[in-house]
Amino acid sequence: MTDEITKSGNAGADGPFGHGNYEHQDLGPKNIVYFLVTLLAITALCMVGLKGLYAFLDHRVRETQPAVNPLVTNAPKDTLHIRPGYPQTAFPSPRLEEDERGQLTSIRQAQDDTLYTYGWVDEKAGIARIPIDRAMDLLVQRGLPVRPQEAANSLDDAGNDMAAPAPAAKASGTDQTGTGKKGEMK
Image 1 (cartoon, rainbow, N blue to C red):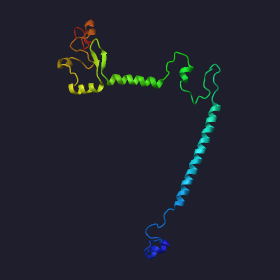
Image 2: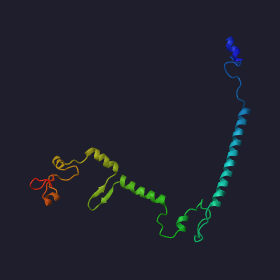
Image 3: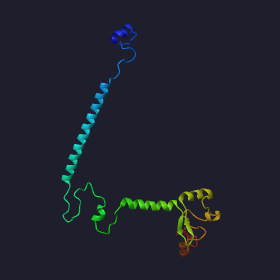
Image 4: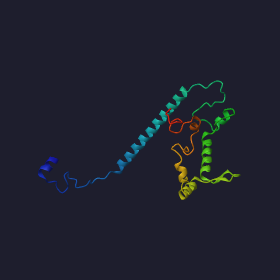
């Protein structure tokens, strides 16, 4: 049919296939309902299949779980679902970590309090701490502390004072160049 249209060049007023330039038939509500029912049925089948798969895997895990040591008398039967407060009541003191998450939270809270609040480091000596944001603002305003120029020039790369002789050079009678008292190489 398309060959006839392309050879003759006449597509007609209704378009090349006799339907006009658009589709005249809409999707019926019956087809939409069939699609939704099929979608719900497939979803229900998937849910039932997954429920069965998880039941099988749960049963398999219970069978392959090793037996509890006979010396342990208060171990729970189902270790997948542990009752609240189990470790605190089951193990004798001293317990090193009872609530790892809570302990970590309290440590981080203490660090945040140190970093972001005002407080005394040593109240008798008058040493206080300030929040880190305020310290950075003060550093930007005041700048970094600078050494006097003559003190900076008298230090070598390692931070040693070049103006004072090295202690080993005084004791051995050699200077910084490695020559002896009379200029001889050792």
